[in-house]
Image (cartoon, rainbow, N blue to C red):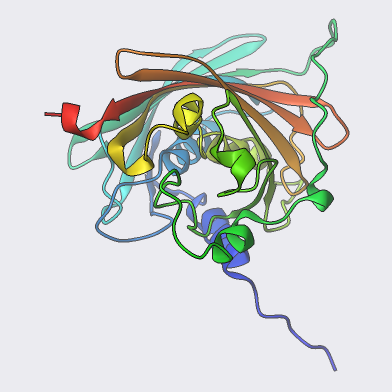
Length: 297
């Protein structure tokens, strides 16, 4: 007799993410997306990134996204659907350019430009993956947090939130190593559902989602010993993602996140994304709001 295993909460969230990436076509170049989690709170930026890229893919044939640049304009409302309007900027011989605007209640909450390229041969070189423990040597972040006797003041309130990706931090959350001031925050990430190779571009849309997880908070890590997370207001502002090759989205990926500066209530974070064999898959840069709450006015 076949015994069906009950899906984990992470697997359920991953299945839900795949579901909402099936956007509803409204008219030519216009799509409607439902939300991963419904409720009276802000949309997660990674969801809007992934759905925007998915909408752009709906207007492109036989070319893969290699770069996107996005701006988070307003906080999205998770209780409302999101409209994605695609502008077909250019269809060239080698490159295709699309602009996507995400809209709620008649106002733009997000805009993105994405470039797609035909497959071409060329030079090859890449940075090496840093020497960090493999995911099998680390523990799931959710399990680590469940063992904490009391919330760590340095942790985000969303740190224990179940995501569509399993995450294993090189510095265990809440540990003495995690609490030290530092400039880098490597974490292994794996999508919790199989990813169909026949669904063109899906792997890159999932990568876009993951590329916004825990990025802004990395900019606060050099001050971890002196600042409580509850004292800070954080938000993604602008985001760039370059995808260098096919993404093994349902296998482990190392997000080597690091911050290069903070100034004027802004923090800048970069990440290299490596496959478990050490191949550089993608690069990320993001500027985010990093402000003391009592200075927000």
